[in-house]
Length: 94
Image (cartoon, rainbow, N blue to C red):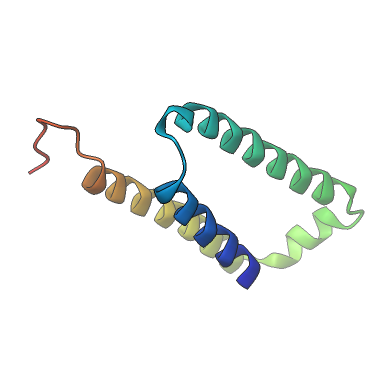
């Protein structure tokens, strides 16, 4: 867990101090590719599990509700933060 937090922090610092803005588009493409690769690897791991469907049945409704709530909450918070933090010049969000 700490290794992920440290990596994210180092990336943040490098992004602020050293990362040229002309590379933003390339960085975005790399991010999307890395996320897709991660999701693919997770899908392979789940698909390789012989007890996957039985495990899903035992999770229960509460786990499904918590998962959906976490996803919807994350989407809502990202939307609200981007609306608040990324105001274009000459545009008023109030």
